[in-house]
Image (cartoon, rainbow, N blue to C red; front, side):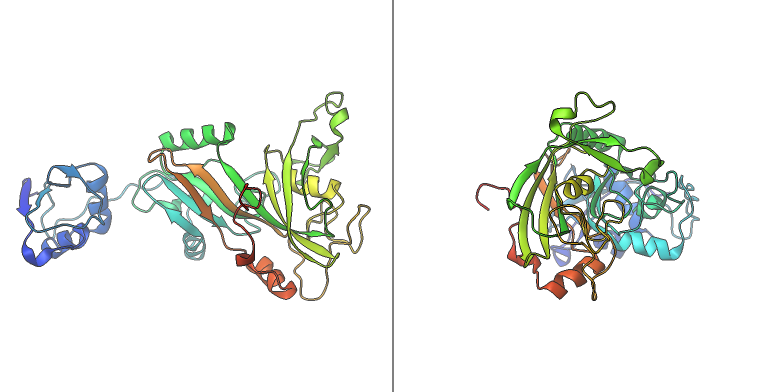
Length: 350
């Protein structure tokens, strides 16, 4: 091992990234090792903490901690806790990363992939694939909320326990804001409103297979097991009276809330076999949600965006997820365009 070194940045290295500057002088250093030194504060520029991507300037002093000699066998990495991930799943889940920093990873969860394991959900799920999302960290990132198996879109994971606690509190305190996009049967009227039906487990099923039953607001308090639930909705565009593109905001976070609420409104989500969105007709005010033609029979519900206060930087952030393939094909077929609608149709200036 070498001793601590302090190296002055030369004129020829102006605006070079710190990691590239180090590799230029110490070719045997790995990117993971450099990022680890930055996280631990062992690698410093002019006495201050830095990131691997920090740009350096001539005259700056870089403190380099003791390094292994070239040819030394690197320490055997600790085996990450968690199941083994196949190469194909590793590529899939890493391709789903929308954004990440040292504290949070945001995924665009594919439809059909459960957030966590459970009865009837199988062993392949986001939580079981997080060993492919270490990116130099020793601990697997942690889920702080969930999406239904067939719902796609933004899913946040915390890279440390501290951030996991902070984000969990933010969800409980309702300081986060989630906007979903859905294709639904018919056109809700009025075109913007709030659904306040309570929800209670219907029985006869287990885990994700259990259907929720809507309860009129006046009957919630006298219905055993019923919980209050609130959803804001807005129609963004429509295909005549046949179907519509809706934005949905769950004010509460009940199981299957958006699906059960839209079905109770008479406008089930396209492709939702559990709540009447796969038939040619339904008993509500909307048309049948099976649109036919080239329209996919998969669930058309997508967590489009999530806004939250970053637990460390305190900045308000919004992460947006593009539509999954089957919904993008539907949007193209009916002539709906993502850029034609406001990011938040419920905002005062929308």
